[in-house]
Length: 311
Image 1 (cartoon, rainbow, N blue to C red):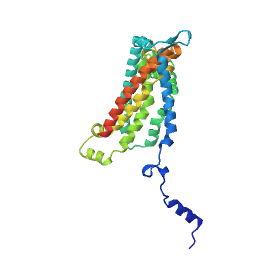
Image 2: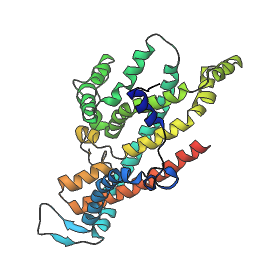
Image 3: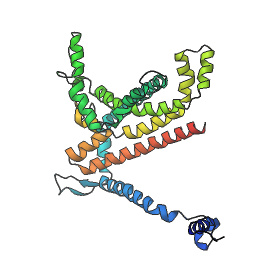
């Protein structure tokens, strides 16, 4: 019987060819030439800015006075470490990151447990819940500043007026709390989505057994759902911390780091030194300090999450 061309092509495709020296040891294909261009480009993309930041942190470089140039050594670091603005910016960064993490993780866990239950319109409610995460930070800050927190025309001022209370000038009286509210609103959907995904892997038989033992909703949440979300909470804390260290747009749009230094975090301090004071050397030194602190925190968080995953 004569085979058709399609059958012959299929037979040639399925028949293994003899292994040659080009196949490498054990018949494995060498992947290094395939990934080397991407890895090399990624290294250049990250190492060149880092090298330039290190270089300028040891030089005198003021864009308003080009004649003031030369090698500064560690003078930029000495000046920065003696500046009270650095300590204040570090304190603001810690408060901002810690408060946003506490709000998003706690509220995210509670909302994930509530949205895991069956109720009419649950799908639409879930979509509405995660939608703020897709709003740009600048747009979010403008919405909160002009539509919600405005002391005259804002929604919060209208609500306080209904009860005969004076309006609150949020960004003058409670500047850091206002920024924390805005950033928490942006990152709450992220925590909610991760924790809800973790809850969906919880066995329904475990919940049913807890209910048969007489456990109420609060007990089930504390003793069953929260321990089950432990790994997901670790991932949320790690991811949010890395991004929250660089919060900038919300501060720039709403308070510009003020009043005074009340909302100046480390990222905004670098912006002030580089693009307001035009002192590139001092800004580069602050950037190096930020990189060191971020890497220390990231290493600690990654180790903590890895320990959680291995447990």
